[in-house]
Amino acid sequence: MKARIAVLGGDGIGPEVTAAAVRVLEVVAARYRHEFEFVDALVGGAAIDASGSPLPPRTIDACRGSDAVLLGAVGGPKWSDPEARVRPEQGLLELRRVLGVFANLRPVRTIPEMLDASPLRPEVIRGVDIMVVRELTGGIYFGRKTRTAHEAEDICSYTAQEIERVTRVAGRLAMQRRRRVVSVDKANVLETSRLWRTVVTRVIGEEFPQVELEHMLVDAAAMHLLRRPTAFDVLLTENMFGDILTDEASMLVGSLGLLPSASLGSERAGLYEPIHGSAPDIAGRGIANPIGTILSGAMLLRHSLGLEAEAGAVESAVARALAGGLRTADIAPPGVIGLRSEAATDAVITALDG
Image (cartoon, rainbow, N blue to C red; front, side, top):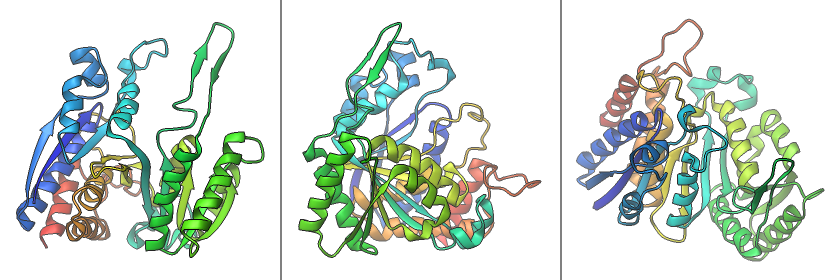
């Protein structure tokens, strides 16, 4: 297979972790006789510094001309002025719009050999396997925004069509898993959540009758993610709730650095990125955890390139490396010096070759 992959390192540790993922994808290409072309482009703060725009036209062209997009992270103190007219995060939001991605998939799985990396008791998190499906282009992040010296507002809005399409993604995934969807909302107080609950109920009932559906208020979901995380299979949520809950869920596995994501739309091309931020405090030190980005590369292989065997091989290699003792600073036990990013990537590649 020949494929073109746009690589947007972004800011902070973004270029470091995307470089690690590219190394792994190059090994996959050689092992399975594929041809992957990697095209670098700017996004976020780095793009603002170079061009004045967080998503320059050249980057848009590179992404539109590629089979998939691999992203690092955007933002940092340099561009954090709340009064700034142009901010790095605008580039990410616009990129999602340009690519037409609306469903963000965030798998959360614990690894038996790493249960001690989580602050939760091992008996609580053993066997956790959750797929979070987060709606990505609606809600309060994209609603109308106004602000004066004395008041501000952010409008949260959803259409039935936006809710229908992300619910279908969750339903299809549930059919491939344990056939259970928990839909998260705040229907006791929000009209958008009441519409969300009505539409989700209709779509699952009519199109996925084999799937068990439960509605859960977001505050209860936050509690149960820590109290009984193994009860969740597919977790369906609107934009802001999903953003918050997946950061919470990262503590089940021990670190934000371990979790990947895929943002998908109706087209084959998708956007793949770790769920962590740019971590400017450790940028350039060579200690960032590359696992979330490497696993995002595995999701790229699966969802955009249709290479299931190759995706599974990368995921198995990561699991074997972690089981064999791979520990970066964010997941190392107290008193243990974690592996540097390059060494951690080497461990995954060694496990992949083995």
